[in-house]
Amino acid sequence: MKTITFIGNGNMALSIAKGLKNSYKIEVVGRNLEKINGFEDSLGVTIDKALMENYDMTDKTVILCVKPANVEEISTKMTGKAKVIYSVLAGTTVQKLKDNLQPEAVVRAMPNLAASVNKSMTTLTGDIAYQAQAQELLGTIGSTRWLSSEKEIDIATGLAGSGPAYLALIAEALTDGAVKQGLKREDSMAIMRGLFDGFGELIQDVHPALLKDAVMSPGGTTAAGYGALEDGNVRSSCIDAIAKAYKKATEL
Image (cartoon, helix red, strand yellow):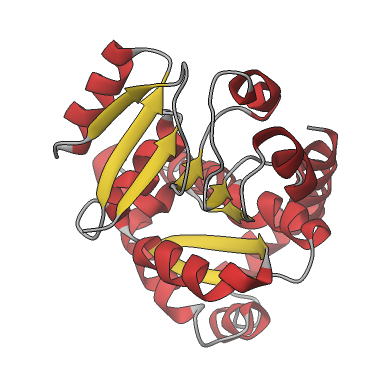
C-alpha cells in the first residue's frame, strides 16, 4: 500500500486522512508527538509518526497541511526533496513552495471538510505532469476540478474551500427561522438536513435558477420568502463573500 505523508496534523489534515485511510498508508509529521498520537486516535488506524526536526522528505508524496505563515519555518527543519507536494495552503503559491521546500513538483489543492465523508469538492492546479495523479489521489475523497491558473484556485478557495461555512450559516439560519415560527428544534434540524440532502442531488443536473423557478409559484409561500431574502441582500452578500475570501487568499 502506497504511503502518503502528511506534514501538519490539524483539522484539514485529519479530514483528508479519513478519506484516504482505506486506500493509503498514512504517515504524519508534526512538531508534537502527543498531538500526532491524538491524530491517530481520531483517525482510527495505525499510522507512521515522525517529528519535523531533521525529517527527510526524499522521494515522499507529501500533503502539506501547515499554516501558510509557517512555510519558511518548516523549510529549515526538514531535509531532502519530496517527489511531489500537494499543498492545501490557501494563497500560497507554487513558486513559494518550490523556493522554500524544493520538491520535484508541486500541486496546489483546495479540498473542504467534506473530505472526511468522501464528499469534498477539491480544486487543483500546479505541475501539469501530476494532473492525473492528483485527480486520482484527491478523487478518493470526493470530486476534483483541475484549474488552469493559481488565480482561479484562489477564487475557488472562497467557493469550495470556505463554502461549507457559508452553507452552515444558511442551514442554521433557516432552522432558527422555523423554530421562531413555532416548529420544534429537533423537527427543524431533521427537516433542514433532509432539505440539504435532496438539494445536493438536484443541483448536480439542474441550473440553480431553474430549481428556484420550479418551486416558486405566483403569489405563493416561496415567493414571499424569496422576496425577504432579496430584501436582506442575501444574493449580494454571497457575491461579496467570495470576493472577500479571494482577496484574503491573495494576501496570505
